[in-house]
Image (cartoon, rainbow, N blue to C red; front, side):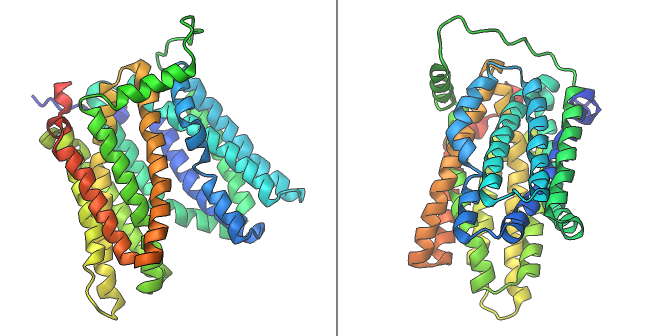
Length: 415
């Protein structure tokens, strides 16, 4: 008899969680388009203001990521997710109201955007630690794979849906639809039946600073989670450098055009979906270490494909290696993410889940900002190809961390 776990979507609690997450992924993709149109077209923001608003997207994670992670190990996670969804609905609903009354400005939108980002941080910080309470440990990879598949579809098709809604209805009305979607998501989350211990006041005198330091120390000293965290941190550095250089390289130097560039990026979504489908099988066959290592190697190969472009004025010939590269990149992410997340959720005790994820996520954001700054300097001094070449080296380092650590032989079955 097969020892493979059954279909995880048959679990009622996870089915509701997955439905809410999927709706949120599509809503986020639509909002991303609507926000950009609103900022640039409706509000007429300057280049400086656009830069500030885009930077504000990561500010809540940098300022409050570790704090919220520690709180998620003290609070019940389901109520936090429900309240965060309701809060985001109210924030988004305020935007069309301010627009209709003529009081929406770049700065009022910026304030709402920061609040929205903080609420998203709370929702994300609660979701990952709550998942192990919804599904058995041997189904965590499958659960994360299902979430990854839905997220990839949303990222691939959501921007087109968002563009259509904005074109037909205007950006503020599209944002209002997103607000209603978050209320629906909150209702779904509220119906989840999950056993969470009631939050009790701390009586040991420990403040959040102690909890944060304990979480960082536990994460970065664990035998297998430490190399996993270090590898993904390095990966984020390389990814930031590559992504910062890729768009101007493809659109300006290679002169791909918006349509071809969009098709190239869409292949990344196809690869990501396929990788998420194959992730559980890869984890069983090669172990979590093998699946993560494969993802890291594919990331390096993906951007290496960008560097070996044939010299040609034929756009199709140039676009093919780029598309292959994006497909490989998405495939690698789809393979590794469910295995990595499932392993982290299975290894960490419940009281450490929030801090583990917050520690890794916050360092990732810091690395992403550092990477963007490095990419700007490298591209200015040496050009985009050299910048992407540096990212390939960094992706190789991320793979080597896995290869020469105990993580390489880690398997879910050994837990």
